[in-house]
Image 1: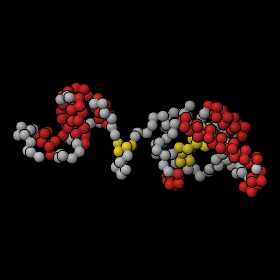
Image 2: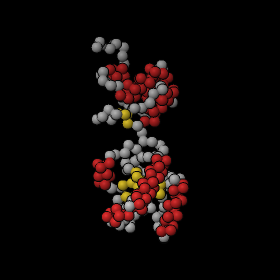
Image 3: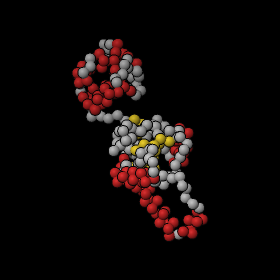
Image 4: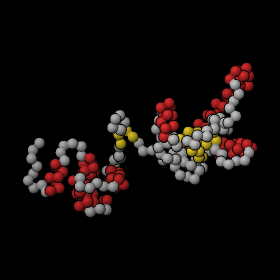
Length: 228
């Protein structure tokens, strides 16, 4: 590689000293300017910053905020791409339509969501109230969603069943709850047709939810319905 021109200033020398490796943020800023065919002053005008700020980005002295970098690459018709270092697979942001609590807040991003029948509020006084709520939620397609708050139990379940890529949407969770209902009805029909097999299987557990899953008292779960 030849020597740089003698008229280079301090900023150009700093850029040259970065070497021929991947340009990182400074290189991306220059790439955006090249695509847009604008000077540092021109890009600064588009982003409503000073020309000296763009110069510092390109020399690596400072870096643009994430929101500014996002706006910059969008101006150039590009999008950010995040790749896992160990596998090389592209990693997308978490979906925006993931299931939420009844109050509208999101579930914690690090937990895994699973369905346990249909939603009913806590503190109901009778089984009749419980089943009325379950029927109402079934019509509204409002499933009961559980998530593990215990890190150890989450790791155990992920070892057994794998790690979900994202939080499912309300429609997906409702479809899973309906599938659980269908599977429960199939089992009940099999038991009705083959009562002898039911006697060998033993009595059903009395401590179960309307969705069919045993109730837990380990304090390691959080229950919340999805958003309306």
